[in-house]
Length: 336
Length: 79
Image (tube, rainbow over all chains, first blue to last red; front, side, top):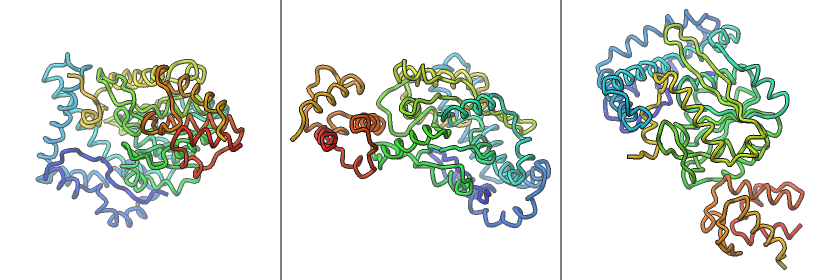
């Protein structure tokens, strides 16, 4: 079972205030040992009880003197991302600022919700009540016939989607950038789920045996597993030969998901996830299937564009869920 | 002895499937990662080409030894 909770968001250009806040925020690893008695006490509690307990820590966290400079700095970073997004050029300064504040609020909400969800995961039925899923039957239908290449981006409630797939014992192989593999492994404790595998993909040029990793992923797909590509906004690891469009920008394009699906002859499916701020319920949507036939007939770049376009359309429906908008700026090729 | 037939077949695959420019003359000494600029996903495509040719699976160690066009051609010819 999940016994560790860590905060795994990395903030680029962290100043001292942000660094200090992250080091001391309650969800930080330094506090893990203090959680152990709570694990025991909270094991069979309902989400609302767990939430009540954590709300005290949240309140204390946000009253810290480092919190306000942290918030200001984060919002500025998010604004930087929004300002460099051609799709949002028509937005006014005020609209962008409001959006940045909303993104910050949901992003913070996400950080605080993750431990609560992890605690709730001891009780599967209670845990599953926290999710509204759409299209899961389609996923299960596809899985009866073949593996499925599942794609999601780093926005919305993607961390919760990982938890959902783990707790519900899906046969899933997670493809995760090697840079964040250790943090993800600490958070989700993949080893405790016999049906789950996690694979770290080397970033940049140093592709340590990436071929073998990808080769094994194709075999996983051929054996009827889900391979879940958790891509950055929109993607960064390895295969960056091509550029495609996302939010109006030329972005580094990972061909991995499209390539694996083609080699394994399986369909691609997309997973988007949103948090209801009021109820703290997660909406998971499994949708936009790209069939084997399309994957075989169309050039890889077209498939990547189809995937990016769908994710962009979904993101535009609720831009406040772009929780990594500040990262996006770092990962895209900005067209001035 | 290297088979010209295998080399031609592999060259043809590189031009048609791996999008190597039709005007580029592929050499045996070309390195997959350098001259041909293949990334890991491209290499995987080559692995599946080899497996189709030899009608067998190849191992991680064997994959690691595939650095040049000649390595691939020689590997196929061994079977």
